[in-house]
Length: 295
Image (cartoon, rainbow, N blue to C red):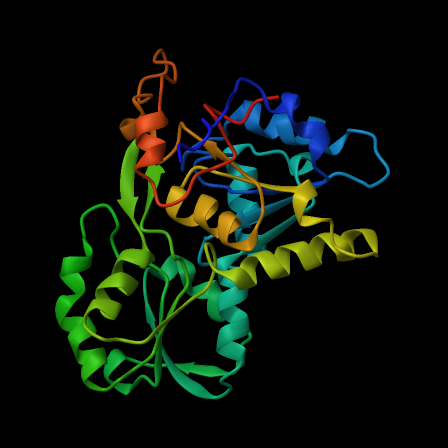
């Protein structure tokens, strides 16, 4: 049976009244790794101001491998207004919960020093790889020059000792200045490929959606919003759209993100054309597509 076409939205305003909660991706939707997408912040502010029987909420859901205060500081620097959102939930937050389930362990940090705050205040000992009981992967040491292949020997050593891994950022790539940058998810995939045990913290896995919905309920001192009145907005089929679909949450795909080149919108003067064939080839489909998040 032929599936109905996925509608393309010109503006989020057209569907905004349907929702009480937006679970909004960060990198690729609110910023490009250097600067804010101003129209996206404005759209979220206008959504939060809509009247209704329930307050309209925005929770930013990021696969960033650091606790939410660090992400907020970065967003401030890019120019994303705090008025655009109510709360932030990160993979770093979920990773900290997973680490806390194993107090006193010897943990190896596989990733850049900038992600070290993920361990602050936790009951653990940071050790070299050969001493580790568990490894936490937050990314590549140098994501401008390295690939997952550069970690082949390191991963083989962990696998030989059956060291479990927590992947603190399930993203495979993100966009930075119109360039795709590799993320921790690629290293985790490579580890799984040689038989390593990996637990992923973040999208597209269910705990992130359970936690985000619970947070929305806590903001209002009541039950979480209905799933049908929640929408996930993101630029990645594999994480944002697949995760929402798996949880039963409606979703909107932002075209000018990591799939921009595939969708033919890499230049600002190019507009989104017919993407039905591309969508048909994907493992999941969004409920709508929008070029950028705009009101």
